[in-house]
Length: 116
Image (cartoon, rainbow, N blue to C red; front, side, top):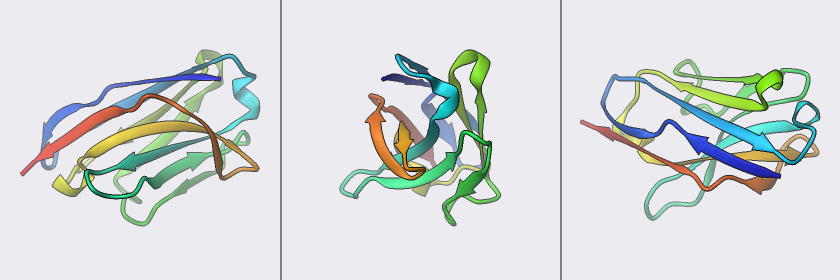
C-alpha cells in the first residue's frame, strides 16, 4: 500500500487546513484509515480514524475541531482541521489500519504549523 499525504502548511491560530491522503495498491474501501501526528520531541499520537463502515473516532484533543472523512471512489481519506491551535503543530501522517486500530502502512507525512 502506498499513501501520499498533502495539504499541510502554515496557518495562524484559529485558522483551518484540509489534509488529504490518497491510497494505492490495496482495496481501499475495505481498510480502516487513520490520521496520526508527531510533534518535535514527542511520540507519534493518534488523531482520528474512520472504519470501512464509516464509523468515526477522535482523540479528545481534536474532537469538535477536526473532521475525518473518506471517499472510496477516489481512494482518499481527508482531515478537515478547524480552530487550529499552536499545539496542533506537527507532522501529520495517514495510515492504513489492521484489526481496526493497528497502523500497518504509513504515508510520508505532511507538515502543519500553527502560529500564535
